[in-house]
Image (cartoon, rainbow over all chains, first blue to last red; front, side, top):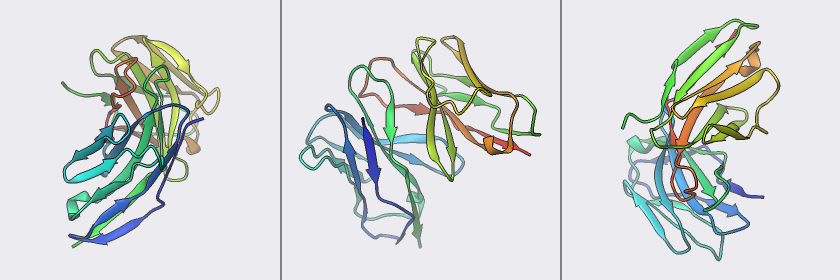
Length: 113
Length: 115
């Protein structure tokens, strides 16, 4: 079956530091990959996505590249801000048929000034 | 687009009482999902519907939980009787059916506390 493994948290960084949150996946086909972000008291919201190998998703300074050879979709940002403090979830979805998203366990990120 | 709308935002109830959570998906989204989030277990899929039909309810914890989708614009998740271990944040989410590369859109959740 499908699964997503992401970096255990919590992660604490200083403002302007470089961020990497690792995510690897197992899937039977060629899924679409997503990063979601959850701010305190809110639901998850899409941060970025990539639908095929070598695609790069980007938004708000965050990037992730769909690497089929390493089955990875690591999230990166060059210079984090306090406002990036949130919980980040990696997820995958099969492109056809099964509607479910498979989520990772989430990584809590705290940025200190 | 108002997004996925859930009500109530907060619910506090006593053990043994019936609880009903409500969700209005985004118009045109024919797949609807109910999730539960806790510190211990993270995000768990309880059930999802396609075109108002329950497709997979394997995540529903036990018979005390039931979900319905009487029409394309409304779904309920009911817990009867409620127990303290049901305390969690319950999220509803929707997406277009058959479009695996489209993201889920989440509501802001219902925080349930059972005392």
